[in-house]
Image (cartoon, rainbow, N blue to C red; front, side, top):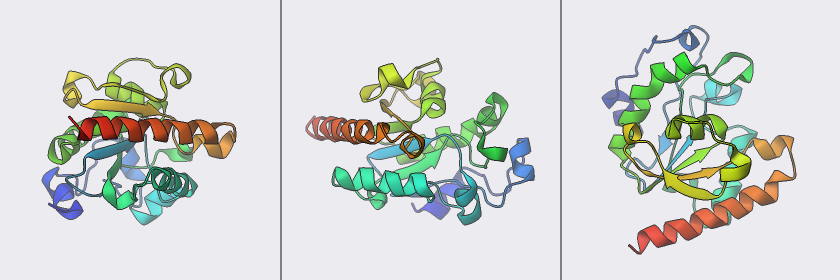
Length: 191
């Protein structure tokens, strides 16, 4: 199955389930290896992603690519998506009703891709996948499980790559988190 087939299978072609559809240029479904062991989930597309129709292509995407390369992975090795598929105005966090509108799409993506591990980047994605409040300061670099509604998948928690664009002190933290992720991947591959 390819990215186009995933888009068709989840039925997202002309979605108007929430107000984010009113100002979007593109629905940003996701991209990458559709049978990937690793599924990375962010919160929402930004301006560049909305323009290109691809996730993580702005400055945060460049940082993500560097972090993946740091542990010997390429973007093409994983599948990348977001909690919501359309850009919120002014780069704000998605509202609960917007996340609910996209929830079925995300669940279908998880089911189709069937990853060994999900990486949640940022507080919004992490809290949605755990269905509870979480502070990244206390939980980054750890592995847990998503809630049952998301298939009880292994979940690795880290900061959003955009965080280090605003706080340079997080660059090393993100690198260390991805090194831990690599360790968890090796353990999962040897089970």
